Length: 254
Image (tube, rainbow, N blue to C red; front, side):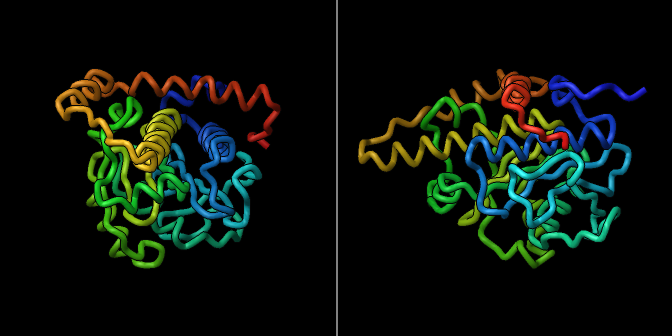
């Protein structure tokens, strides 16, 4: 029997395609809420439960706040539509199929071109231990030098090698990437990376000498919050985020 969709279901891998659709649509609506949008560009994706070679992604022409569970499209890892005649955004397909195809442990991926995220991606120093937000995620942040991943499949393979088994990536001069074993985990990591970038831009732009937290403290903090195979405790913020969407009458289920 399929379990009903609830906010709590986002804390674990989706059990059905319907559940994955609702979680992914909710994630797109959170893009819109937090201002992580770039016109119709950038994407989030979800693996279809029981169909490891199929994934869900938004239609290219839709804004994030137009996405619903019903209008998401199902693609195979080769870029062919499984249902309907939708033609994929090439960049979105290459990045998301590469990540999901190389990481069977994750079920969601999210990519952004936010102003602060792109700004930090263009900084030689990368993400710095300037804030609590950064310190919670820094040990799982990786870097990928700027390449034309929008059209070159070889560069997408390099991207997945650079990501390795981490959950976050700063794509140099491009943007940010987050993955997760659930919708909640993917959102958690993306939110904290986005906030870390905003704070870093503010601190470095202030002209004041920044205070950097010691690497040993950062590592201890990260390990304390990411024990074993459990998701980070902050992932439970997903519950509040979905409640907010519901309370505001945002029809992400469609």
